[in-house]
Image (cartoon, rainbow, N blue to C red; front, side, top):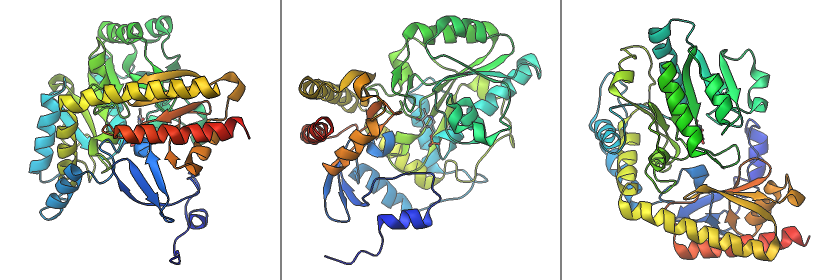
Length: 404
Ligand SMILES: *Cc1c(COP(=O)(O)O)cnc(C)c1O
């Protein structure tokens, strides 16, 4: 065997310890299969955390990247470029939005949205109209503002003092929302399906009351579609599955298919509250990221790709139910499309990570969403035989899990 120069131990030696990665190192991927340093093969149900929507090394993304790489990588926002304008136009054509701001991540897209909402509040109701209503268990990113908007105090409490005037209420609590969203509220930020918080679907009536109360109080409704966007649920954006259209939508993760990019989408009227100099970022909308995202977005928005997401989701659900008939580990399957959360039975509460580790041994990459939920966010075009083989491997992991 070839002498390895880089090992998993190096992570512990050299990296700031904010992650606990798997005990193998992946070196190469094609579609929904990935190989480690030992040439061991894995089926990828993790999809880079809902990012690699076309799998690994898809020719559409590779060609867009390599073509643009020969031409122009970066300019800075003193100069605009063709790929970013084309991408903006694609997003406008296929969503409610009239205007787009580009950045590099989901947290930055939410940061742009929350700052814009505070500015809208100032214009509409003076400095007292600054309250942001957010939800328990929500996840919006790791900047100080977005981690405070997120509803998991364990991620923010050690970094106090936190930005003020952010109130958290229970997700799907219609009565609490009716009361919390008041004349002092400048924004409501919500995930149409809570991803990191355990894959929790929104009640349609809950989203409708958010829309109604925002309209009544002059608050901005922000949909955080960083995880649910770009085809993940089988619709281009999850709001399209609901009766509600937001005022601001944030998108990232799958938008670049693995190349970092994020965006904030909004209407003409809201976009005008930002003026030159109000906000920005050096890399935002650079030609390289925009060219890749343009190609990825164009591919995913095709009706046959979105239909394929729904077909694949059903194959997953049927397969998971079959495994559960055998092993009796799962309580409930949640989510929509290829954002799949599987909650463990009370008997196995808190042990999702163990299942993921056993799955890794068996050659399957998967995620958790909190301690009780196994999560799959695979490529939107994962081959059906890879779903079957991945579920076989999950079965082997569950066999070991239940017969230690
Ligand atoms: C991942 C995620 C974010 C943060 O995105 P980053 O690119 O990690 O900053 C924000 N909101 C939701 C819903 C997410 O799933």
